[in-house]
Length: 81
Image (spheres, rainbow, N blue to C red):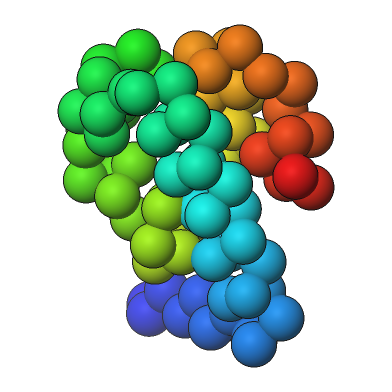
């Protein structure tokens, strides 16, 4: 039995992904943390961090919380700036 296909994100969702990615990148660079180091800090790989920053994929709520803790910022900063 075929599995249902995931719906493609709409333009607004893609824009929100890019905005969250821009905030992740800004906060990471502000603290002079590399993608590799942030990935180590949250238990993910560098490619995941890169994908989030480019807006290719969206981080999970757990990942957002882990990044916020690693970067010492409230989680809402990653979502809303």
